[in-house]
Length: 357
Image (cartoon, rainbow, N blue to C red; front, side, top):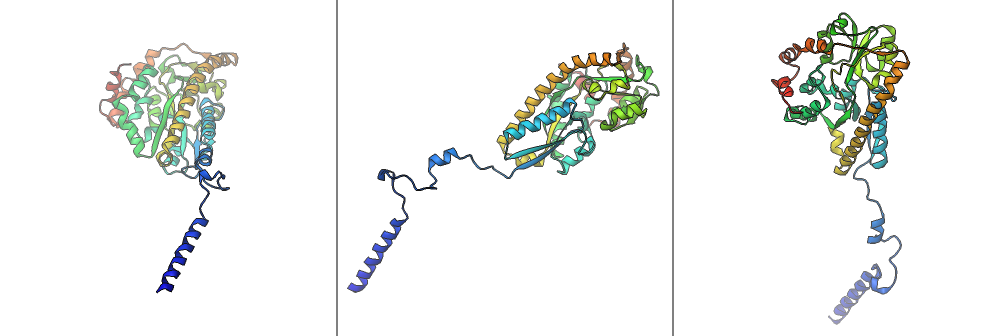
């Protein structure tokens, strides 16, 4: 029995010695921590590991790299890449490199591309109430447009986009109003009768200009200038800043600043990608988008002052026109479009006209 007790005590003493072998010196011992130890000081100087593997975002644009929207897309990519290096990488593809606008929208929904910067008009194929923004003369100013987008009247449209996999990051890239131009002067709506008029592949644009008497002709944005030069179309429309950027004034030099709509460019990310981002990454992307929107809006206004002189210097001219003739021609269209289901909200046009702005 005594031998058994002695053996047990010896075993316990050995365990105690071994347990002490792996202990680090205490702070009071005056010895520094062993190399490679995870001290709080070392942790403080080490950046946190990314919450996820690097997310690659393919950002597409219909506009060329030389146009303001293309420039804004590159700026957005640069800003995000700088601020979210290692966690998010944006690759920018301008000039319909990922396909025409409608194809890009489809790409977004199936995650073939993750983001887009293009006209807000392009979402009308998903959110029908947004068609009203493209109806000629439905709004009388940009403030009128924002009053609509910030009201309850637009809430269903934004929810429909979310449900369809499209998260709008910003719609405040404010373009100049939309002008029309042609190879002959357009002094009144009657001058559009029978004219081959370039439109995008969006129904409401075709309705606008067929109502004005023109022959709507679908031409991709990337083919716009060539189509005008080759006579595929003899007239068209766009916001002011794209006229010189695309060189359209060289082939359709008669420009009428009718201001029939107040377009916006938008930045969107598909919801699958947006939901992968941390809340901090989402905040950074929103901040970058806001900065780009401010730059874009200021740039297009300032650039137009330069472009006006360029148009005149290169043989273009600004046409005096009867704006009321265009407005009067469009009066029946609102009721027609609603009856044909171009927007889902009953009485939307009249409700928009009643908005304070």
